[in-house]
Image (cartoon, rainbow, N blue to C red; front, side, top):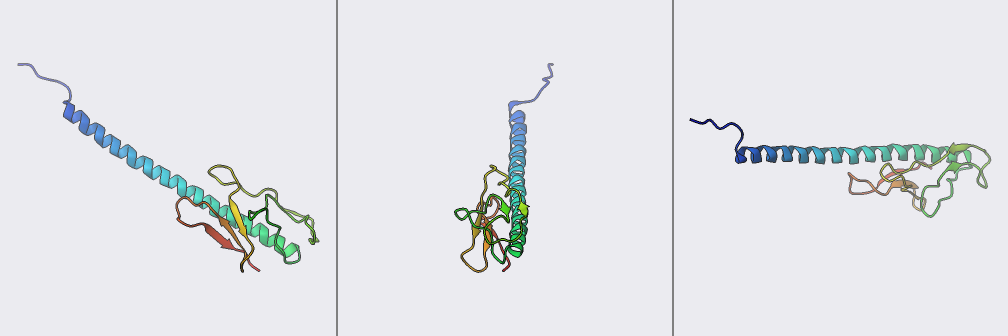
Amino acid sequence: MRKNLGFTLLEMLVVIGIIAVLVSMGFVSYSTAQKKTRDAKRKLELSAIKNAMEQYYSLCNGSYPLTEGGKVPFSIVTAQPGCTADENIMQAVPLDPKDQVTRYDYDDFGPPPQICASIMESEPAPYCVNLQQ
């Protein structure tokens, strides 16, 4: 009487299927966590930009820095006309954590002015913070 050692094809397919499901679940969870982390970093950077803009506002006779085509200026320095202080408030505006491009919009048309992260990965709409006036 011969005893067969090993696994049947069906047993192998079941195990491979279970492993595939677990790997795909892990990948989706990891991808979602990465998106949420990048969005949290964007929110933190918007807060830092807001603080720099508020500091500029208080140092420069109640005006915000000039926009660069609706985008947050690349640097927030008080060396612009009408500003009495000479400070370098923010050397460079933070870049987007995903592709290292500046993606922060500056809307100074409506009260109150806003700074927005135009691309949020885990939220459907842009995330904006209002500037004080």
